[in-house]
Length: 362
Image 1 (cartoon, rainbow, N blue to C red):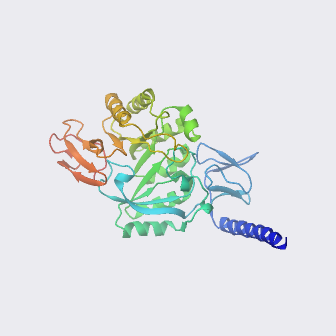
Image 2 (spheres, helix red, strand yellow):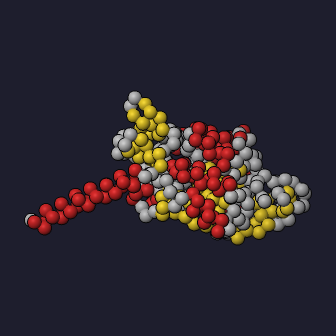
Image 3 (cartoon, one colour):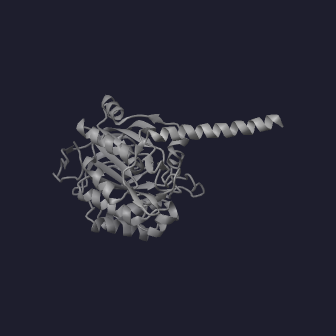
């Protein structure tokens, strides 16, 4: 009896101490940007979720926490992942091929995708996972020492560590590094406008061309993502789009057709489109991998719609990851995994016919 009471008491004290440690850490965290005071309380207006956050609670992204009458970015500088990646892994096929990117992420995400491959870091709070405490200066220094040409904000959703991304991107630009935004595109217009002057490239994960499916798959909405894509294109940030084909959810041919037609009508016919093959993950472990026939059909739909550069990802031993001249169809960039070879391709032009190929090649 005494032992049981002691254990209960010990658990209570431990929980109290842990909470105190967390609150102590939060006090030193950065105040969040894009906070609006309303009669009902404080709104986070960073992304379309527009969370009304109660005291001692966080928003949907688990990274913005209301404490002492303000919302704090509790993930500032708390990185859950850092690595050096080939640029092709992002995927970016028309941006500095063969270069490397210093990739970083913090825990959390503003969407709850049922197919998330990084759920162990995207669907948790920054304090629920081991992290590295780093500054923008240390990130930039590490990227330079690693001979990376860019810093990629990736793996989870960089929008949710907006303050840290913005500070790092500004410093990276001063040191000649490129900034890459690998995102679900779920960000509001004003913060995106503040960020874009420091972005050089982006890959936006366009889940599908259906608002209903967006809500079903990830508790999100389609229109804000389309707005983000248009804004990036308008501001001349190099853009590529990824679309994951999930059997029975996002692989409908009419939906794929609508997406490709929308891209063409939005002036995105030279924007590379990456169709990725689905593999069971997170809450969709009962869905089989995407049939290769479906991948091939999506490729054909995109080409027919007028999209010049279409790629198939997660497909082994495929010629669908190569870049071809849109005019003479000669091979310009050959990719075997992350092994990349350039063929008769100089300064963004086909060496055979002289056709210019959209991208940032040097």
